[in-house]
Image 1: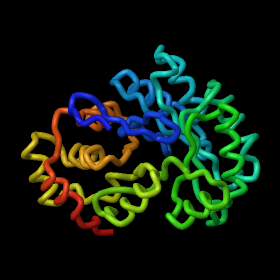
Image 2: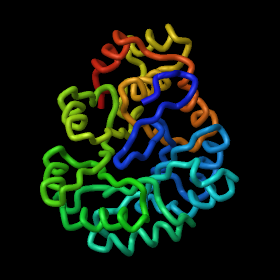
Image 3: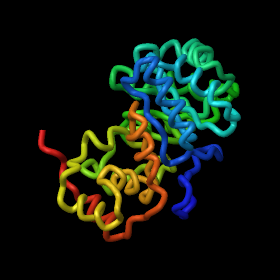
Amino acid sequence: MTSHTNAIPTTTLRPDVEIPLLGLGTWQAPDAEAYEAVRTALDLGYRHIDTARAYGNEEAVGRAIADSGLDRAEIFLTTKLPPDDADDAPRIIDESLAKLGLDHLDLWLVHWPPNKEARPDVWENVIAAQQAGKTRAIGVSNYSIAQIDELTSATGVTPSINQIPWSPSDFDADLVAAHRERDVVLEGYSPFKRTNLEDPALREIADAHGVTPTQVVLRWHLDTGVVAIPKSVHRERIASNFDVTGFQLSDDEIARVSALDAPER
């Protein structure tokens, strides 16, 4: 992983696929908003976009990528297989590619464990899609470590990434270690919804760097090697979320952020 602060760092997914540690999430963004958000993000320098079949905006995301004028190889794109369609994985990835207007994905995830089960048979079809060149890397979302181990045991192929809810209040050193032991990259979603952005410690760290609490939370992800995909459809927020390369957190600051309490419900 790169360590400089003047560019978005990356980490490597098996099999040797680079993923930027910061991307744009598109959950709950309808077509028009998703299109504008992705166009804005790509114009601002984002090169990692996360969508899913369940979001219903793959076509808009694909149009935004096409209209950006960027080379396909510059953009890292993720979409996901919904659990309700898990038995139709071969058809679903073809439909996703058609909607996106692309010939391959960079990352395809099983969005949730189908019926809360690991389903190695579904994972076999995801592996087959990768072997057929339809996606460069494969992984899961919302899986437990035990479910990841079940997939590995049954197929011999470990997911390269696990996308789960992640914020300072979710920090669990044992869970981080368990992913790293298995060479599974940790990717987090909902970083702000699950964070008390008014926490005095967080505000103090933000003030020390001349940044906002949300920027500290994202820098914490980057400095701990966790992929972050904050979602926004507002240009100012999309820009602010990307403006996290001019500072780094000290080890002490990382520890303080990791110790933040969950927001009151």
